[in-house]
Length: 427
Image 1 (tube, rainbow, N blue to C red):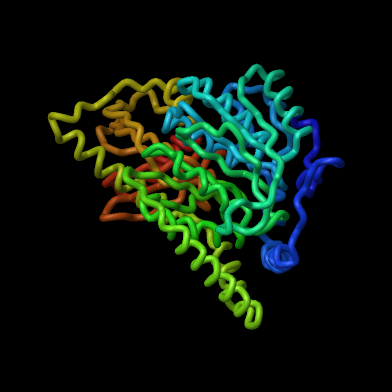
Image 2: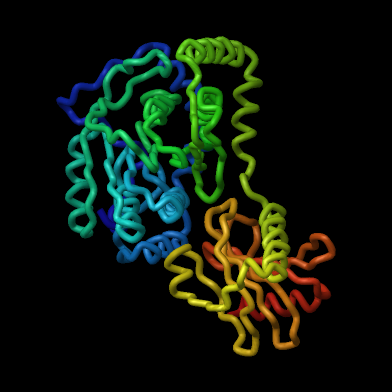
């Protein structure tokens, strides 16, 4: 499976002869109506991400340029694959469990090799696809355990539709990747993945693909109710949306009867919404809103500037003046601009950011001016030409270069900030 192979529009059809559970009339009704309101999200998900983002992903995990097939449609897009690498770099997990194998399996397995050598166990309902993907991973020189898990009638009444016939599931999971089954089984089908949340270790993470779709939004709301000590957040950077959940200590799930009550309430609400259409249209319109705006990025950049100046004033927080561009790029997936030879590096730090990792640098220009360069994943509506904003009497110039966004902050006149940022952007 390489970039020379095309991606079909629909998800894989059941293999002839496989035991596929029957579909109830209510499931067909849900698919009909959620398909009707979800078609904009399905159409948008046909785009698998920019070529630059794909090249950067492959470079980040050390794979050849044609190692991945064409992405999008029922396959994960580059944004979700970057999120997987972000999570593995952050957690250094010993055990990753994946629901729905494919391109994400190769990316996760390769990222694990580069970040501690954890183990990947992946499940998929298509036996032939599991075998083909296993051979593909072996050809690429990575190791993972891919397992056939046919769909069976759901054993629990919490979630409608069918679910994987899982076997030999690891007792302790550090990262759970959910990219299956397809919504055509049922719009809420991926909600049943919460039966594995009890196996997540404290600090473990869940990544749900296609989180912008109306069905997955309902799933997310139910998860938030059932798992109050897990923090779920929509994060940007992918065409279909990503829901990230992080488990804290002492997580106590709500009783099963409360889940059943919530499910019943949702059915009533759904029936009422079909009559008036308002709830469905509102939910669809709400999903279109972009998760990250330029204002958020500028706020993060200005906050990192303040934090960097605070560090410089503290004796207990020594600065790191060593700028190793190769190591920083390998660890964070971010490429830094060339710093002018007559500038000094005063501090270099790696920070968490809303879009993943971020690099904050404090620099001294050739005129002894102090500025801070903030670098993170590109999710703003900026372009290569720097734009200017103001925060707390500070000028913030921000721009993008491919999949990376930059912001230069300083207490300087706007004209000077634009000149400095333009010199960095051109490098």
